[in-house]
Image 1 (cartoon, rainbow, N blue to C red):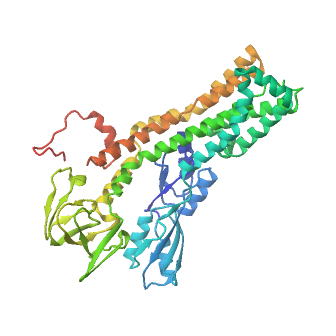
Image 2 (cartoon, one colour; image 1 turned 60 degrees about the vertical axis):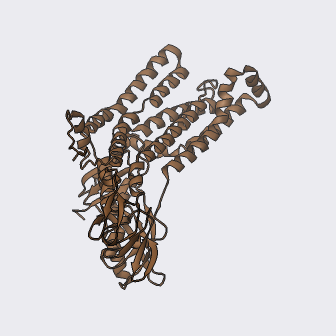
Image 3 (cartoon, rainbow, N blue to C red; image 1 turned 90 degrees about the vertical axis):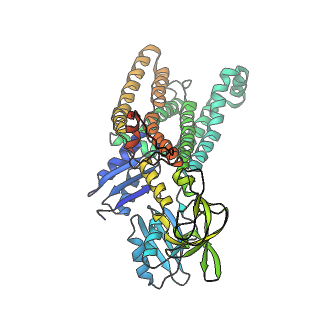
Length: 489
């Protein structure tokens, strides 16, 4: 386990301070090496730690690991115990359960499904996914649901409190018919539901961060929304202590709702930055036509193995890397080489996965499948470059480390000044405002997302960065030289 790098998805990463806390939690594990967390890809990697330990420690820190459940159809003469042992030896696999009577294997993993399939194939147990692998959560859908839930509860609070400023007549009518105290109680109930429901995650992560004296963005939300809520609740329940006219339930509810809106939009943006890798992988066909003597059969791509004889027809994409054994056609290799003119292929020539057949049909023998194809290696290189941490990111992290404490100090100073100028009510509003508008997410997110967009777009154009740092060094390039064919190598 010491020499194996474990890569996994992480849920709940919303800002640069989240990344710092998650990295600190990983680095604190005994034996952990090279712990890295990436905000844009919502992923992490570490060396030398068992996956179950990673899951447990990150859960304690408030950042659960994305656990994938998948079901495989298997074909093997190995025993149940042997298959499970092979599967559980793959980095990231938490559990494996084989059922030989149904020829299936169910697994839970935080790692790569393709790595597991490759390991099973090498052990003589070909496996094809039945369900495609199901992630434990969809951050985009989850954040959208939380935002809509919060908005539905917040809208009445906002309209009741702020509508009176726009339509005084409506405000007077509500007071006369409902009663001012009843209005405050209704706002208290709705705001409590907002904070305890869709806003609960802020408190679940922010409160421990405050207790451990390592405040993050969630801690700012907790202090901002929590201060407004506690102040207003005390004013309603014990009006002798604080004036009931100074309630700010709408501030607490709107804070949570707007931040949830921002989180949803942020998750959508993160999802789009990974489109480049998905488009590269999407060049592979879902099925492949295998030739067995005079019989051909179409099977899922996962079932193709080395030395299979495969068929490609006009307009179809090459499924795996191989060598032509019969037939001839022109292959469009522009996605690999950038050359716009299709290349003639006949017996003995090499074809690569993802390239497009134009005219004619041919048969080819598979030489590389799965993660070993050129197309898969391009996707892997692109993902590695996207997950890289550039030198400029270290500067950003240093700034962010001081940012949240600085915001807390400024908020405290603002509160004290307004307390002397205008009293307790306006002081609370001013202090809370400082807490909620100060967010370093842009600094922490801009660099990794720029890397993802840049390396992804470059990969689509045939330019691969072996290391992410090369992207930053590219800004110092003064001359780019092409050969006579217009190719850059």
